[in-house]
Image (cartoon, rainbow, N blue to C red; front, top):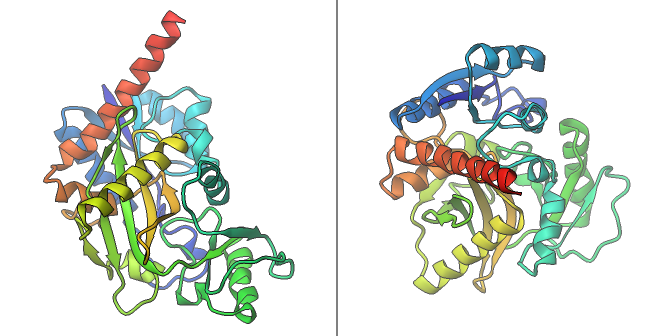
Length: 327
């Protein structure tokens, strides 16, 4: 069994580079190398595979190295490529990857799970009539790594809204998701597995001289991390059960991270499901991923954590193949 670990330059900071070249550190190779090392320690053969702009070149390399499964697919293009060629991979499928943050929020709301009220706009001059209460929070509808997020993204009055929408739509080139800004504790909940998913310790992000988790705050490790977060048993159960329901509703596979705000009344509001969640642990050169912190709080080694996720994917494919044979 040979696992190919995808990597590509600037994978975590591609969107932020459209706004600024400041504070851009590319740890894509270091991140992939750490994953590959953990996979080898878990008993698999593994190799780094650089994602090429021409997918035919990537396919040639996969065939040359006789890769059985891919780890670290981290973009819509990569997942679409893998599904098109029938190459097994770790993580969620195209049905979820191609779904925008707005569509995910609609699905979550349909299932009567709490998420802030929102709208989406593609143009600062075409802001729809809305009843959202200020302050509002504006972000790219398909962003990652807190790209495009600064303190100005928390908008306190209607006058400031067009400018921030323009930053997202013109400079990043995406539609802007505008939602009510919920005052509370920012947390993220890591989940691994499929039929019986396992919820990792809750991680709370405390801001260090900031009002939200900006790009610089997150990617330069300026957050104050609490893991496990300090919640009562009843609060923890409510958060974990809500996160697990969201994970299942959105049909996540193998691993994922549910970002939430716990409001002052204790309600855990869904913000986003990260299908390309950071898995790097504190050892090594790469930026520490939130799920890596959670795994360490569980006293898991890299081999147990990353290798375990690979095993979840393998079992999922085996079950699919068994079902295909019997049906």
